[in-house]
Length: 119
Image 1 (cartoon, rainbow, N blue to C red):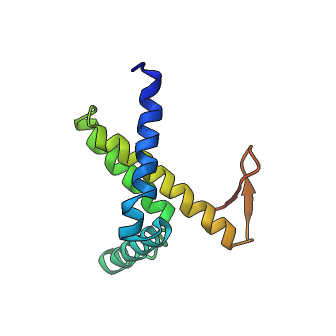
Image 2: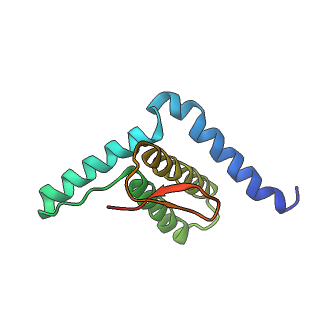
């Protein structure tokens, strides 16, 4: 295998993870991650008295950071790289679904994809 195959292999594996059995087991990622965000928001409010709306995309970014912290300790751990790719895909899905459901404050990427700006 040439080194150029490693990236494709990781991304294909992440695609299988986020579209395969886990989706059937946990449901669509935007629902699962939005629920996690709501629970995190409630916990932060209860614990620190702050009101922060954490979205599913935010949860994805936080999980990517969690995996980055693990990779700082074990940079060769394949599963952490795989999980980061999967969380990136799920975070994008949350953002795209939210943009599809809302017409307020849209912005576009260089490719014309509509994104929703944070509140």
